[in-house]
Image 1 (cartoon, rainbow, N blue to C red):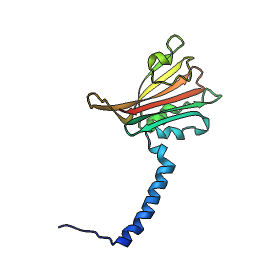
Image 2 (cartoon, rainbow, N blue to C red):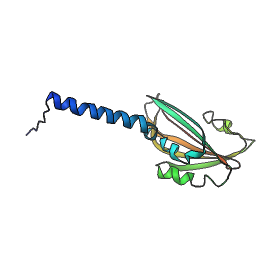
Image 3 (cartoon, rainbow, N blue to C red):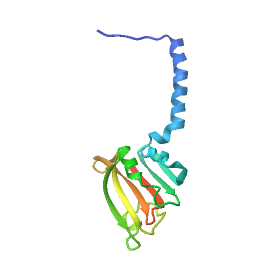
Length: 158
C-alpha cells in the first residue's frame, strides 16, 4: 500500500521560501559550531587571541590560541575535550631541546619554550588518499611551559 502526499504549486512555493530562509540563517550563524572542532570557539572565548580555520570540501584544519595571565585558567580543557567526544590518547613533554617543530611540521609555531602536548582522537574521519582507508582524526591541546597559553590544533579530511 503506497501513501502519496501531494501539494499544489502555491503551497509548495509558500513552504519553500520560509524553509530556505530558516536554513540560510542557521548556516550563517552557527556554521563554526557544526564544523569539526568548532566547539572550541565556545571554550573561554574571551581568552582567544588567535584563531585560524581552513575548511574545504575534502578536509580542513582549525588552530586556536588562548592567552591568560593565570597558569590555572585551562585546568578543565581536557574534560571539555572529552565532553565533546575527543578521546585522550597520550601526552608528551616538550623542551627547548625538542621543540614542537621537531615533533610535527603541522603544529603551529606560536611558542617554543617547552610545554606539554596532549593528543586525542576526535570523532571526525581522515581518509588516506592512497588506500582510501579511513581513521579517526587527531586533535591536540598544546600548553606552553608556564601554562598561560594553550593551543588547540585539529586537522581532518584528505
